[in-house]
Image 1 (cartoon, rainbow, N blue to C red):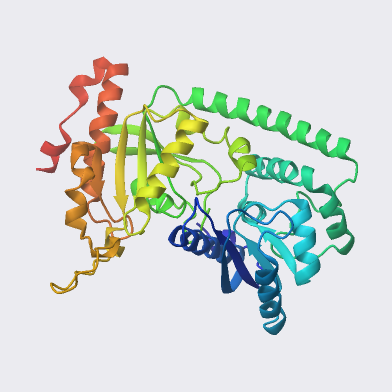
Image 2: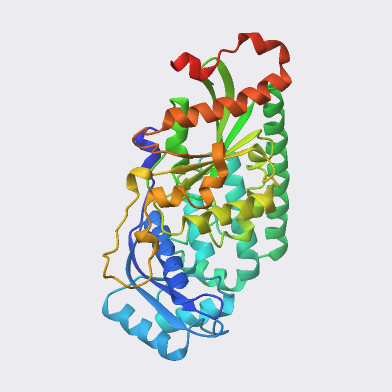
Length: 407
């Protein structure tokens, strides 16, 4: 994509991250979430200086963390000129007020951070309307807090409101805005539905997956287009559709917004219309970052979201394990008696695990280097050809075997 699209205005701020270790979230899981939160902060333009974790049975209803931990955070914030604190879970209006009063810095939670990133990334009228709707739905129960912020009109991460004008103080007016945005999205959805019908009966293949797994890079490689792609979370918000031809078989390839753990409910609801492309797809390419230590959990997050949003898990699916060029393997010494970790498992061992049962529905590639792309093309061709011939049986004689042509 042209460079001007990537030049999104940034307001760099130093931040600390705060999370909890609970009976349902052990220390390893809590650290994983904070690592992802740090990536989100980096995407938004913030610099993470330090991460804080506390072990509690449940979040403190007043300050999220305990009094002692909050004092520790306050001291660090003051000593290091920190401008912002980001918490890994949703905060209530009361918690935000109490924490801000104590720390004297801007306080965000994971949802408000993601909403800020979406506000930066939205380009089309559809994406902007969806993000704006999610923002208003998020703000509605937090009106008391937001009025104090509006008096100061501070800028930076998390303060990019649904519009440039002041948010109305009347709850009824905000509800009216939400209603109008929903109607606007319905109109856009009807228009997109007509567009989908006008594409005819071409086979539709949709890319789905966790955010930042390389879907847009793969889209560019297969369609020879220039869809915006970078090593940031949520680089793509708008659904992109391209016509692709493999051998003599045309089909439509769709790139969709990526998923993430703890995806805000407001965004899930707002982006349901965007995922109609997934709902109406004939084949799904589930792209996975095989180099990520928690790729199996990411797979489950995507499958769960697909079940909740568009009931698309019954569609033919090809698992595309991407980024094999970035896969790392640290073999254990023979005298090392400690349990093996994810880093001690080779790519070949992974292939022989549960993935081996997937047979032809699994492929290992590198969209960055192009490795094994031809194998992926063959698999897409075979699935798309079956669907195409079911719709256009008279085209059977026009097809030549893809593998024979290669020979």
